[in-house]
Image 1 (tube, rainbow, N blue to C red):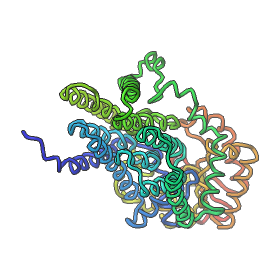
Image 2: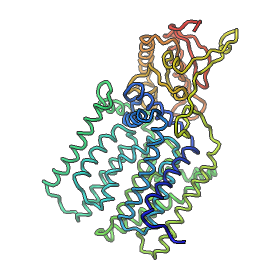
Image 3: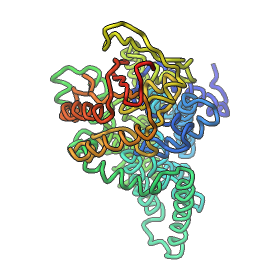
Image 4: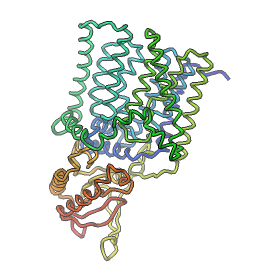
Length: 535
């Protein structure tokens, strides 16, 4: 049977990318998508960002949620767009570099499989990665032909990237910048650029960055200003537990942070199955570097392969996720590295298809393991559109009262009467609401990100601020999950907060004159001094 016309390639690849993204969303659960959905709903209700560590994502998802009327649709659209965009740009770069059609298609198919789908509905990491790497990818697509539009786009990506997850976008922007400089220097045979041209190009980058920063500062209204808030937030993060995710020792475990000795000793089959990727990564890096050294005048493909490999490996250093979440564009980099080897074309094609087949087998194995994983509506990454939101929540008061009685509140009553604190966005998502007491641009209690919140003084200040807000709004009910779950306590970074969190919870209840009514899942419902027993 004859191959379809090459004109069909982008369309078929697009269908592939969308199909696998939706399949990944339905198969792989991801807790963090609850933050994305809640942030979008918060924007719909309040007109600004909820989360202090990624206001730019809340802005994007919130605007789309306003357009479609539901946060789930916004998250789905961004996820599909990310996977589709990554797949097509890999294919377009491969075609532009003159790679064989089958090899370019194989690289794109591998990207559609692994770039976004294993993350389920979570989009934060890959949105940040994509924005940060966009200038370098566009330059690769242009074969090194820099122009003013690339300068404007690069500047815009810089300032928008700063509003996303900086543990992804900051190293991504740095790698983009270094790669662009190295690529252009090699392209121009290391000739010193004219001062006039250099000033012009830097000027276009500055204009793109400045205009985008001004627009975002207006479009994302946060007290004290968007970028000052980001600087303040990350000055606290740098000295917090979250900074440990980028430990320098991880450099010895590139590209997927696999502890080989531990994996072998404990027979971690789910880890060992990815060992061929680690070996292939280092072979590809050495091969590309050697070819650049031997023939620097015609090595666009080698430079591009290194960009895909290095960016994926180094951005993954700062992630606290599983290794399947760190692949990014690494599969495409491996296949690109085969595409320019001095082998007969049939062997190159066979190598590319072998990598693709191996990656497909890994994906299906991973999906089989995850198929029965926990599903909860409040953070369900399987939601493509809004599920039928709960109309109310009910609680059995016999848990705290002698006479049994069930009391229910409608979603509108919860939105109007309830304060929500700490990891209760799942309940809000199920009801299709946001909590009025939560401040714009402050996010949730996270000692892991904000070292100050973990101090005795910081906890007192947090209690004082929450009590003040709840009293000002005269909210009769409080729902909170300050106590840590068993899963969280398995993480040493959280375990040390256990006792302090319980004391903080008790003090908060005391300050609010609150009476415990019962539990809703892992959260506790309280009646504050503004409530009455008849409510």
